[in-house]
Length: 281
Image (cartoon, rainbow, N blue to C red):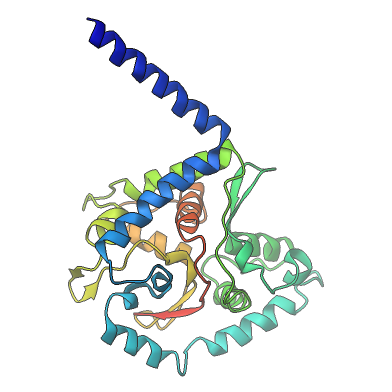
């Protein structure tokens, strides 16, 4: 009986301690979860340098990495970057530009995603671009717009070499991070698959003719020029497609589910260099 009481008391103290830590220091809680996530991959792929996860699947194989480097000698997204630069600076329907709305392009991409303490929600670059453009009268500038993807590519290029640096400023931000984490591990669709099934537990293995990429580094290289699509794809496009491919009804584009998932993954990527736009199969 005494032993039972001691165990119960210890459990209560531990529970209170964890709760107090959670309330007092959200960043510490998030960092512990992020470390566990990263350590999974560091143990799974001991020969990969942590900084090389920015190359995605091309970090897993030397031959694939050589092909990737060859593709980047004449990258297919260069025209898109030029078009995105022009669109970002040009006057829109109301005479103002996206630059007037979001500011100088240098380093702008590196500030996203972030938790907006005023609205209590995660902010995403492409979602803010859409909001600005539509507020300025560009009604056709939406999630499927080539102009959006071109501007995203341009802004990514203006942050190349900078580091991902996502913060967890308060408890609400931690809740968004943890919701993103739950979505990563949540099984969906007729195939009953989670993001983690493909890009964590089976990362490095083959799915048909493709190697499954690891879960680290994903936010650092978007948008990407997908050879399969012969065009640019944003991170939101890819997350939407992954959910759809489980034969589930995808979440609303730029809804809280995708934003929180991006926030979680971007925090995991803290310290990695931004390399977008990139080329992927």
